[in-house]
Length: 247
Image (cartoon, rainbow, N blue to C red; front, side, top):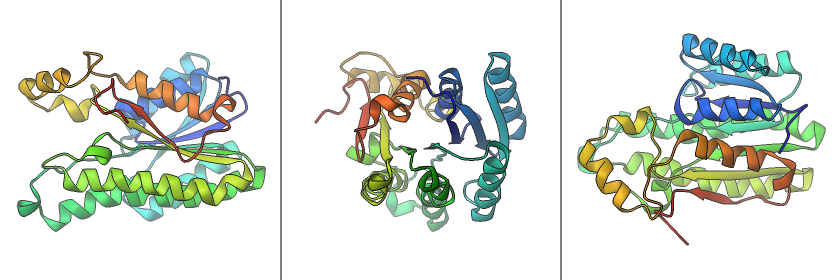
């Protein structure tokens, strides 16, 4: 699954799944534009990748801000010349029961998790169309497939990503551009670290493989979908959940 000569843009790359995806894509030979809000963490990631012989550059970007997306992607294309692979990974949670959920928390989750993906796609698609090659990979969630109490905003945003994935797959397939989604199950990240130990233990009981996933598990799936080996896969949701949800 070598990716030499390809350029990838990964959002939410400063930690967790995005960090793992950036490292894995660089390990396969891609040059990686890493984007997130935390400049210090991005610079540390770039140092990690370059120390291992890879190529990377940091672009500070809050994906909730359309202008920052436009300027960040423009800067990345300016530096690397193109974007071949887009990994829409940036995401937040603002958990609350619907009856108590504030409109601001609904809007912020939808803007960060879903609207940003549409905006990032819009900014990179010209580069992909020009070269008639591209990989768009959206990081959704098992909760976008099965729902989760207290996460109506998050589940809606992630379900929306699945619909966006399928629509984009149909729009750009004739130009040799694929669009797929990866749906993680319970993954050990900063987002899940705040959950109670009781919740984590109950979650593991629902996973047939008997363990929590790692960011590297998701990164491997992303690398596969970015590769030539996945050139006949589009509009697909790849479940990486240990069997927690099947079918």
